[in-house]
Amino acid sequence: MIKTTALVLLSLTLTGCFSFDEKREVKETSLGERDIKYYSNKTVTSLEIPPDLTKPSSQNAFKLSEYVSNIQEDTISFSEKDNTIKEASSILRTPSNIQVKRSGERRWLIVNKKPDAVWSLSKSFFKSHGFAIKKANKKIGLIETDFLENYPEIPDQSVGLIRAMLKKAIAARYALPIVDKYRIRIEPTLETGKTAVYLSLTSMEEVITKAGQDDENTIWQSKPKDQALETEMLYRLMTFLGSDHAVAREKILQAKEDRQLTVEMAKSVGGYAKLVFSLGRYDTWDNMGWALDQLNVEVEDKDIKEGSFYINIARSEDKGIWSRMFGDDAIKKSFQISVKQIDTNKTEVYFNDLSEENEQATIDFSYKFLGSIAKQF
Image 1 (cartoon, rainbow, N blue to C red):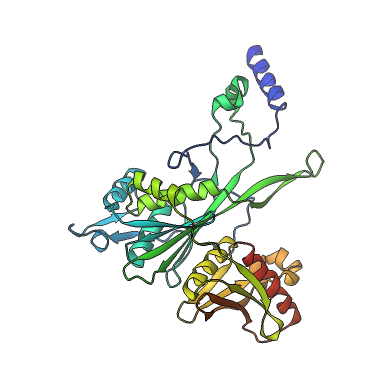
Image 2: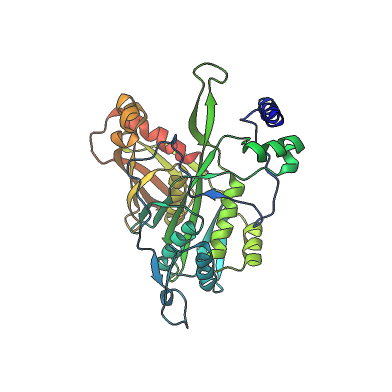
């Protein structure tokens, strides 16, 4: 009894000697070798959950014959155990010609499958990693997951012998949680039978406020993008869609950057802001979709023929007691982002107020919003 008590006291004493918000040490790994562990059964109670949160759809079965040729019609459900998921996904991994495009750090895929096939496989890809689908709008080709905690265990050799022993004895953790969510956007290409697939990562981390004070607390805040993690998940998606592992790795690492993009801000009709891209209409549309993904902007609808994105977003000056009580959803307004080609390599992007009230506050907001878009490039 005395020995047990002494061990507990020693553990608590030593535990107090090291910081619980110590930076986690992440070992450099090659593409395809990173250990990613998402806790699908973990509830993050202190993270505000949007009011439109939905459970994953029960309609999670699909017909293999729609995606794989020369096979008897069958149905595989991805609601089974992990081994069923692996077995089904291995069947679906028929050799596919998948290209990797690159602009700066951004990479995306051009898949020789129709959008419907990519849509179903992408949802199954997320479920295979334990994610619930929070939003799925097939009309605009958008799939977004809920947040999940990503906490790779720190190797024992990285924390030292004593800490490693204590970690096992009292299950101590050496960093505050980080949660991730993903968005996949699926677009038909100009070439029939092929689909563009864009994956983006958003992360939040829990941080300590007023450390050491009586009112010490923790809050959630945005975390800078882990570009290596986003690239790793794109690699995994590429192999899930049918690419050979070695081929996918080489294509992602060797992807050549497209021409350098220039974006300028200018004044438009009515005093509103506009962006000027040194690209054609389709490439500008592609880049605008990516930028909206990066900023987590809610896209309600879009029309590629019309060249319009219809977005819901809260203006900065509207944020106050109502947004603190009910969240930003309570104060969001609808706007149109319009893409129009002016010349061969010149396309302009306009910000339109659908209410046609043309308030000065909205005009000012157009500069702030389109300015944040321009900073993504």
